[in-house]
Image (cartoon, rainbow, N blue to C red):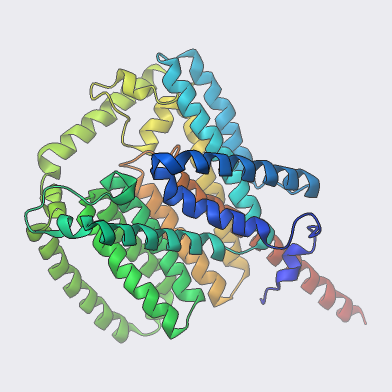
Length: 420
C-alpha cells in the first residue's frame, strides 16, 4: 500500500511554525546530546537549548492539540508511580537527582515521538545519530586515542569525548542502527560508500573500546537484522543463503580469533568467567533481595547503590527498575516495549510494502538488542536509548494510523462500487 506524506500531515496546522523547523531543532539537539553534552563547558549550553526547545514544542503541542501515544502515557504513569519510592528512599538526594533525570527523559520522549509522528519519518533522527557518530569517530582519530587503544598490549579502552568506554561503545552501537537504516533509504553508490566507511570505523571503535556489552550487542544486532530483514528473502534462495552463511561463519571465526588473541577486548572477554560473572551474579542477588523486601514501590530511584556492597548502580536495567520502583513500576516500564512491539506486528500484518517491512524488521532487531544489552546496563536516564525508542514509537504510531485510514477508505470505495 503506497503512502503519501499528505495523508499523515494534513490534520496538523502548518501556520504555527515555519515548515520543518521542529525537525531541524531536534536534529541539532540530538547531535548536541550525543557530543557536546559530554563536555562540561558545552553541557550547560545544551541544557539551555533543550529547555527552550522543550518549551517551544509544548506550546506547539497544546496549540495543535496533538495526541499522545500510549507508550508516552505509560512512561509518564511510571514516572508518577516512582514517586512512591520516596517513602522508602534512604538517600533522598540521590532519589531527587534521579527523578529529575527520568522527568527530563519523559519530556524528551514526548518531543521526539511527537515530532516523528508529526512528519512520519525517522530519517532526520537517524541522520542526526549518524552525524554524531562521525563527529565522535573524527574526534578519536584527531586526538590519536583510537590508535593508542589499538596498539598491541594496550590495557585500556577507547572512550573518546564520552569519557567512558562502555558508553562510547553503546553510542557506536546506535550509529550502526542508523547506518543500517540509511543504507536502505539512501541507495545511491556514493552514499553507500560513505556509510560503509563509517560502519567499519564504528565497528573498530566498538572493538577498541574494550566494551564486552557493546561487542556482544553488535554481534546480536547483526544476527537479528539478518533474521528480521533478510530471512524471508534468503529462504527463497537456499543455495545462496548457505554460501553467504558459510562466508559469514568463516569471517566471524577469524575475526573472533583476532579479537580474543590480540586486543584488550579479548582479554576482558576471557575474564568474564573469572571475576565478571561472579560480580554480576552477586549484584543480581542483592537486587532480588531488595525487590523481595520492597516489592510495591521499591527502594527509591538510584538507591540500589546505597544498599549494594559494591557501592554502585546495579548494571542492569531490569534490576535497577524493579529495585527502584517495585514490581508494578517494572511492569509499567517494560510494557512500553511490549506496546511498541505489538504495534509493529499489527503494521506488519496490514502492509506488504517491502520498504516498510524492512524498517519494521530493523526496529525489532534494534529493540531486542537494546533489551539484551540492558542486562548489563541501566537505561533509565539514557537519553540515546529513549531518543531511539521514542522515534520508533512516533513513527510506528503515525504509520499505523495512516495505514488504517487508507484501508478504511479502500473498503468504503469498493463497498460503494459493489452497490452500483
